Length: 354
Image (cartoon, one colour):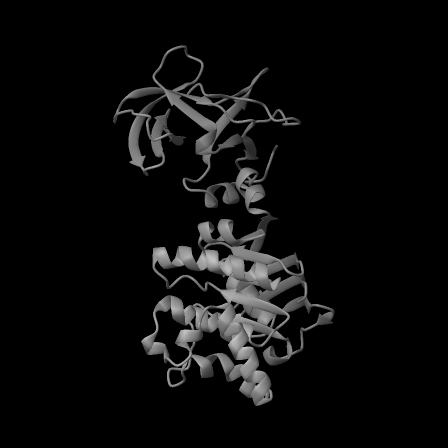
């Protein structure tokens, strides 16, 4: 296995579209690294540049101890798993898995051993004789992963590999993929637009937007301390509440009267907004005026929790509560802050103020 280093990667297509701008990334050996972002943000283009399926306009890509800028995909010693499994319909599972070995002219005995080993790892022994049309979506995906594994590459590149699976199977495959990566100690780079996949699978996440890197960090770092307003609005369900605030002598104060602690070293300036997670807020009936006043406009019961949407002076705020909490539509409520400290951003630039 090997680390992957990307330096000043820039990709511009012939029509003038800039897909990736000055991207720098360091992916550690044995890391499951997830590239996350909306459609068109540049994550798949970056993955294809690593694979050699796209040629970058400028910048360097290093896999292990080699700069691979001028190497063909086959010479880069990587394996790629696509969103659409790309299995050969006329070949059974065994032959689909073994196809890269046959193309590489690996000896038959060695190829058979490697196919059996990877089939056992992926629990595919009973499926080796079946053709793709005889397999479920999850089984086809496991065959595609096995075909990548059998090559024993330096790194695995996964392009939205779970998108086409139903919700229950996606959950099973997330668990399986995480355990598989841990067993192999493999370097994996995965692209997804699904934040739940990114949060549950990634050792670290790179969040991209419009071809640029917004933030890199562990799932908890990206969730708790989003580096920009875009990151705050993209990560989390519901997204982080964003409220205009003013700084007074003792606190941050929103127009509704909600008071928040002042982060250390916060500049005393206008145009600030505070980012507050739904679980950093508590909701109650008005009683002592300690919080901000609002009106319940919606309630989403999720079984183990309830998400309330509260209108606070024209700003809708989401509050996460236990399932036993009960408030009705249009009920007047008081919202208080129960977290440690909010994230504060400059509204005009979207960058962190504190």
